[in-house]
Length: 171
Image 1: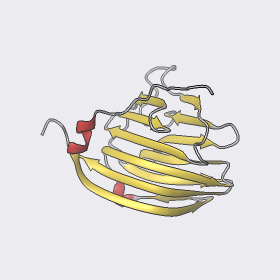
Image 2 (image 1 turned 90 degrees about the horizontal axis):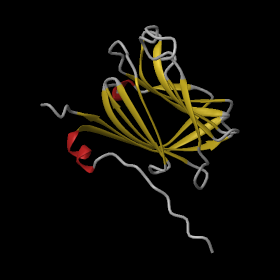
Image 3 (image 1 turned 45 degrees about the vertical axis):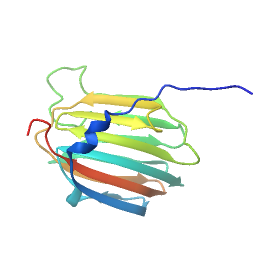
C-alpha cells in the first residue's frame, strides 16, 4: 500500500466573516447552454461549486462579465484540463504577453469537479479539487460584474453551488 499525501491550499478561514449575502442551489442541469445568474453578480464573490459532467465536452463559469468582456474558468472533459482564460477579461492590450490562458490537468474526483472561486475586483483565485490545484490571475476589467454557468456539447449538473457576496475588508 502506498501512502500518498498532498499539499492543499485554502483561503484564510476568516474570509467567511466577509460574507454578506448568500445563495445556495442544488442539481441545476446545464445542457449545452449558458445561464446568466444576474442575482449573483458582483465584484467581490466567493463560490463553492461542484460540477458533475453528463456528456458535456466543456463546462464552467464566467465571472466579471459584461459589455462583451468576461473571464472564463473552463473544464475540458476529454483532456481533464482546467483553463483560466483571461484573453477577453477587459483591458488586455497594454502588453502582448498579458492576455492568455493558464491550463492545469485535473482529474475528476468521483466523477465531479469541485471549485472554490474567489473574485476580488481584479484578482481571481481558483482552488480546484479541495485545494489540490490552484490557479490565480489578475484581470483589468471595466467594473463588469456578471456571473454565468455554461456547458457545451452536452450536459453538466451543477450538483452544489454556494455563492456569497463579500464585503470589503477595509469597511
